[in-house]
Image 1 (tube, one colour):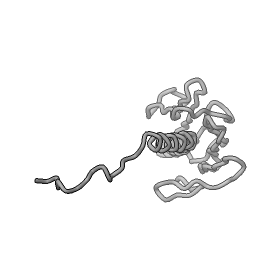
Image 2: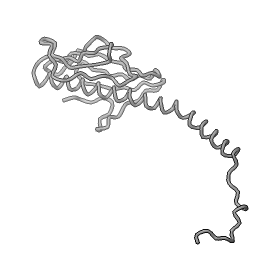
Image 3: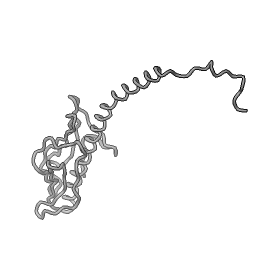
Length: 173
């Protein structure tokens, strides 16, 4: 038989209801303290993803302008948080519109669009994105057409490293 009849199970004591209640309370307190940190971290990741996507689309607008020897611009809509490459003279778009991730908004921008010219230079300007916690990231386009993503969160400034190896500022040609 599996159970040894000589063992007295009355000598073994389990957990009391009070002990289980204490463990459940401590677990609840620890979990409830971590939820705001997870929410902020997720919002920060959405902000970085949106900034990288915006920078990529700005670089694509410059590439299209140079390759097609025509003027193109990236237009912004603060209404729905979207941005799209368009050819301003014909009002056609070579690519689909993109939207900022949920909870991310355009905080500031120079105009409703940033224009790229056939030689690769740009109108220039800075677009600032923000999340629900007030963290911001700035995507800057220089007059030479270079795109820069800067991270300004809670009074500290640092460069953002792209997953594909580029750092804060990089040439697009």
